Length: 200
Image 1 (cartoon, rainbow, N blue to C red):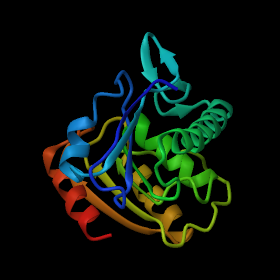
Image 2 (image 1 turned 120 degrees about the horizontal axis):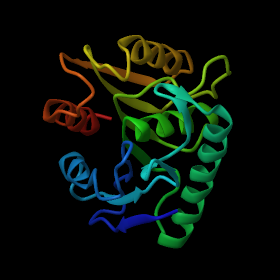
Image 3 (image 1 turned 90 degrees about the vertical axis):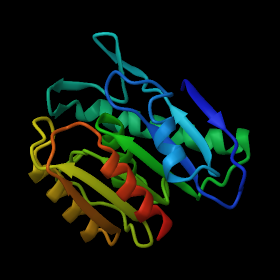
Image 4 (image 1 turned 45 degrees about the horizontal axis):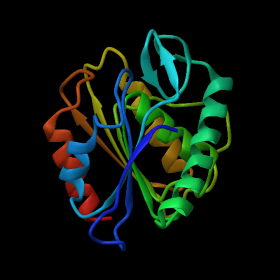
């Protein structure tokens, strides 16, 4: 997978896995990583799927309707890439925290839904429930921060509430923060995520 890797100043810190939104690139969320932890190692990945020329992490059938088969395949592909990247770059595979926005947050949530040890935790900006009707792995010890907009036209508030409940039922430690905004990523969200990160 096309990616950018930056070794951090402190190998004991988590590796931050950056996952952009639709139409983004592996450079989009670099400023967020600096706000969260300037000493952490960064692995920023570009989605392998193109939709009208825009990179994404998995296909969709329509706005808000995921191609479930492709989601499962791409989640497996990303998980295997993380295994490989950890070996090649020498970072701790068990100490990865994802930071995802929109489509990137959805693939990060899908990693949690499908693979018990894929992530140590995740910061999910404007995510949806990746799959419904499946049994999640035991996510005890995993930390998840969700930020959502009360007026988000793409990701309905119910999606964020449902995701919170599903992760909590799987024993993850989850925090849900609301912004009185739409789908855009705000500085307030990033600041709140940074404070959350310092306390996990």
